[in-house]
Each structure stands twice: as C-alpha cells, then as structure tokens.
Length: 159
Ligand code: SME
Image 1 (cartoon, rainbow, N blue to C red):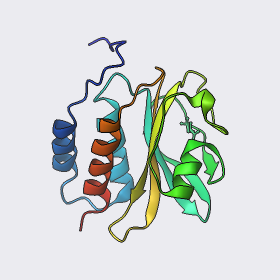
Image 2 (tube, helix red, strand yellow):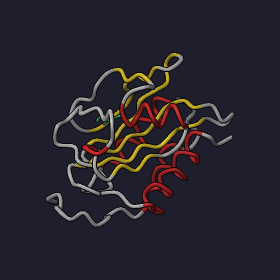
Image 3 (cartoon, rainbow, N blue to C red):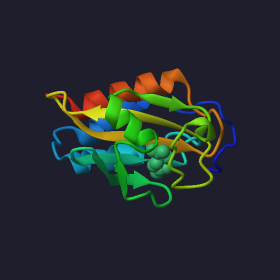
Image 4 (cartoon, rainbow, N blue to C red):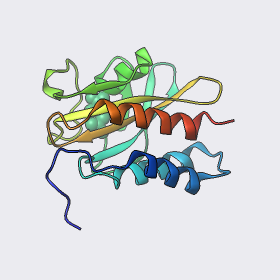
C-alpha cells in the first residue's frame, strides 16, 4: 500500500495498543519491548517517518535504542534537542514546527514536526524517551500524545 500524504491520523490507537500488548505478553526485556513498540507504532500511520527510543544510559545522557526509519543520532545529552528536553523535564513535548524549537537536533533534515514522550518503568524511573518524527508540519495531535503515553505505561510500567 502506498503511504498516504495526508496529515490526518490513520492510526487506530486502541487496535495498536491491543496488538502491542498481545505481541509483548510476558516479555520483560526492555530492548525486546522497545523494538516491538517501535516497529508496531512506526507502521501504524503514514505520518510517522522516524520512530524510536533514546535510552537513559548515564546521568544526563541518552543513547539510541531500537528504531525504524533512517539512521538516528547515536548520543543526545539531556541539554540538547527535544529528546533532551523531555528527558530533563519528564514531560511529553509535541512540537508542531521543529524550526521553532530552540536547540532542535536535525538528525534528518526532512523532519518538520515531532512528538517525544518520557518512558518510565514500574518504579517510575525514567528509562528512555520515545521519539516520533514526521516529514509533515504539525503532524501530531493531542490524542496521539495521550494514547501513546498510555501505551508506553502499559508496556514499560506494568507490574
Ligand atoms: N529530533 C530529535 C533528535 C532525534 S532524531 O531526529 C532521530 C531532537 O531534537 O531531540
């Protein structure tokens, strides 16, 4: 199927959640979980051009984790980019125009907008950020942020 050029959401968030929970049932390994989430989310919607994780590997430091799309930057300090801002603040960032975000890191010059969410384990520790980039401006809606936040909690913070 051709990827659509629409900026309208295609994803059925509840079907995506059900699929991810079924695929990852009983799995505890964080990398296996991240790889499965990155794959399923990436292919769920034509708006998503890069989808993946940056893992917290040291105080103030993120390293690339499982992803789909073109190659990503390997290392992001907490004081750089949208991913760094999410890691620093612990808050989801929906960025409709990356050029208007001070310090945005352009791993791909085609990226126009992005959505980055914190990822916490069951103890509430920040283990990663989840980054979705789109080549379309203003591609993300609040519903994406809410539904994907719920999905990340369901996968990474479950007992
Ligand atoms: N755009 C991100 C960097 C990660 S990549 O684009 C894959 C940022 O500013 O944090």
